[in-house]
Image (tube, rainbow, N blue to C red; front, side, top):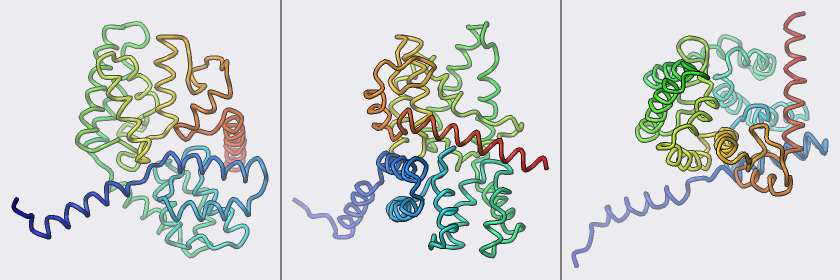
Length: 296
């Protein structure tokens, strides 16, 4: 049998290595939940900083909504005079909070403290916006508007629009991957936002496409592109409408077995019911405090 040239073999080995080295983010999410409980529930912020530092050496940090692990790490490290990576880490934080409109303003004192002035922050955000996928922004702006047409009474129009949006998701998956915030932001073209959670949840209404979309979202949870919460809400909405049950404790259905529900949550990287309640409580408390400060 004819032997392949050595450079082909090297390319094959490199490709195999890249595939095998691809990170699964479910362990990351579970570790974040563990560290967050150390800080939030056990009140041990110094240990949380140490644990986060080790985690972020292994994974490129996310900054999930409400739990905000990377921002929490940097704020705690600054508070306790621990090294968090300086400007390089702060620039990464800017890219993670950029989708959230004016939220970056809450961090300006921190950025200024480490030599990043307001103009630089705003320029970094402007540069981030330039790199977004304009074609997908246009498409999902239309999809978000289309998703609400006819609801809840004109079921024929709703079915037609769900089909169009499901086909948009599938086309996007195949051409660009998951339409994450780092690809399309959150604002859309009309300022109303994409409401990606709502769009995904409504995919449960498509008998034809839902199984495929559900399967792909599991892949994107593992790659770190899709939020486990979005998948869980979509799946629980599907189960609720068809069976009146819930796997993950969403969709306003009473949980019969909290131990099993928490296991199901952990399989995706979602915090336990009790932990999630505390995260939600702290989030709205901070939101209220921020609104109070901005009105002073």
